[in-house]
Length: 124
Image (tube, rainbow, N blue to C red; front, side, top):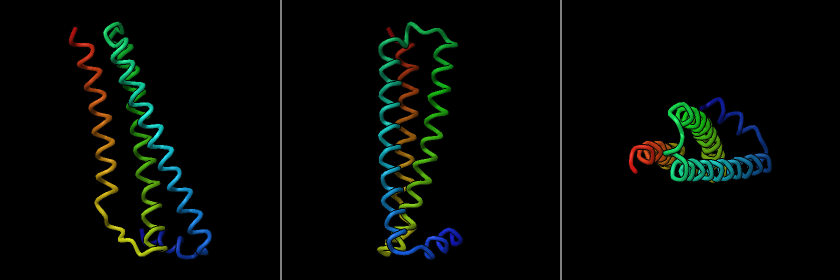
């Protein structure tokens, strides 16, 4: 982390601000995409979950899970950039609980959506 922080220190203030706003926007976009995919998956589970066979549910769930894990990793990385640049620009502490807590919340939403598919197929 120190090597990355040192690289960011070499940037001009304008470059640091640009990096901050780009990373912050990327986080917003990725969270929006994540929420959209969760609601799409829940909609599929509710409307057609019972009609899908085991292979179809497994395929959709695995693809959805791979997407969710990739997206959570991207959000974690981008929030790391936001935190480090915020530290350089504004003196914000780097070791905050908000970043891991936010990722844990999104991961919990992902797991609940998988459980929702399981329940939608099981009950009726």
